[in-house]
Image 1 (cartoon, one colour):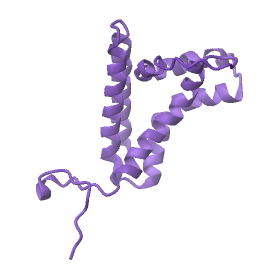
Image 2 (cartoon, helix red, strand yellow):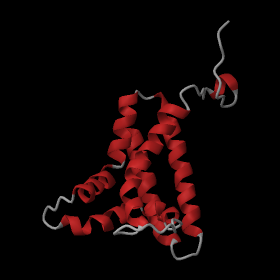
Image 3 (cartoon, helix red, strand yellow):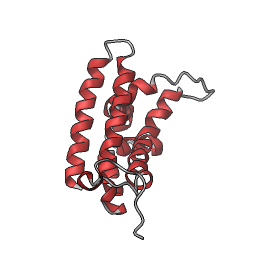
Image 4 (cartoon, helix red, strand yellow):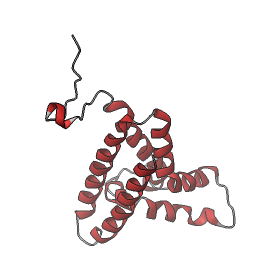
Length: 159
């Protein structure tokens, strides 16, 4: 679990830097966001052998900064003025996905733009994305390369 967390944080911090640098080039931030989702999905696939509670803890701890500030915004809890800065901290935390969030041009008649609500929901969605790939989608995958020579999504039945 610790190795998975270290790898996830390394991927995330590297993607934050890539997201910041790619924002200077039109369209590149969308490519970085899709590449980030692909790499996180590949990392989540490696964790399918972990018990479900370790997968859940990994997803929770990985997105803990985003979840913490999203909960502050949802509950309007203001401790030493952190409520005013929470949306900017979430935006910085989710820099790798800002290219995809910027594609949301839907206008709703709410008090804040849809971008605001997407930023609040994205830590939860990211955790569910990781959990979905780690626990649901690849539970039957066999990755013994020496035995089969390839990845097989169907396990063999012993007859």
